[in-house]
Image 1: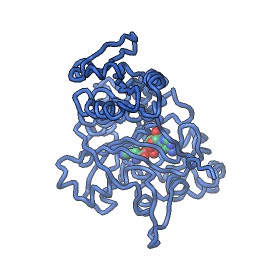
Image 2: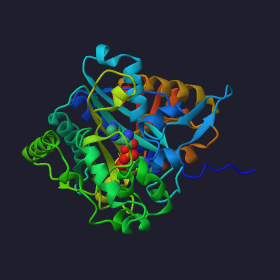
Image 3: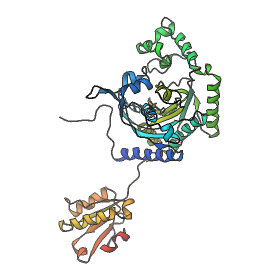
Image 4: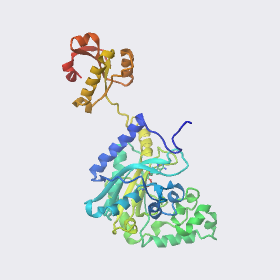
Length: 420
Ligand code: HAM
């Protein structure tokens, strides 16, 4: 039987793995600049956590969760997104009291059972932040600017930031009502809905605007901005003014809904025209009610996540060399079996020297002739090869070959480190 990776998953190695680490490196650097610290939570949780938070009527919960029972029959789910786990952890570990400031970043795999296609996977790698305890527009703007900062540092120039407000518990009910009326089952629009939306509309009419099948049809549907209360309008005005001050371009997009139920006020998505149909590199928003709904203290929050694979595709399109840093290699070769252990010892010594932190030390590759080892060193892009050979060794020395100039020098073993 031949095993292959499960549908929707992929292996990463070589340059692709380097690119992921490069993006992670950029993100961690930016997170530090904005004073976010890391939080690591389990990859699976009680399934009902996601049902309660991400939302019962969302595509993610309805169709895309990997749910399984453990041996005791407990219903668990692989996390389809990061917010619920971090909100749970925030409450469970009393982070409001212990963390000082509630600014966390997270990095890890998310799992969604979806029809795999370009940019849409069963397991994707997300990098994001959650900022708890700050209700001000400054926190929203900080999170959006942090996201933009990461993309700029990854060399991405085509950044399309879409912004919208979903209102709050005071103004959203009137919008929901307007939408429910607009989509009433016996009305013209209600009849046009797809089967899923016909079921959803009573419970969560906003979902219809986000529907992949017929969400685009309803241009004249009621708009949230016509229903925003004074506070939400003022909050949005402040966010946009902060973004303008920071010279951050954005588009107000009244069609933006986001496929998760917990958002209040600001939502945003960051798209790239370098991507295909799945053009969202990342998205997020404010979720001021979630912590309380989960039984925690009344805590405003805002966050976002990038899909790392999509950001990397966008980065590669604009900068083909993204993450492709050449690591320097020094190769230690042995001309015969007599010198295997000498070469092995020197390689170990070099790895543990100052040099080891800057270059990779390879060798000796003991099943190969000296000629083959030199060929391999060339293939690996080694800058120098240290050769243990009969003649030099009798003089307490080795040969050091510069692979670029092919020049070879005899160096005393005691002076090899300096020569390299
Ligand atoms: P999301 O928009 O569902 O938000 O996912 C964030 C990003 O992850 C998307 O913009 C996309 O780039 C990537 N992504 C999502 N699903 C897939 C997939 N199946 N394949 C490839 N990439 C994917 C969230 O998950 C929220 N938890 C973000 C957030 C944090 N909101 C507040 N805090």
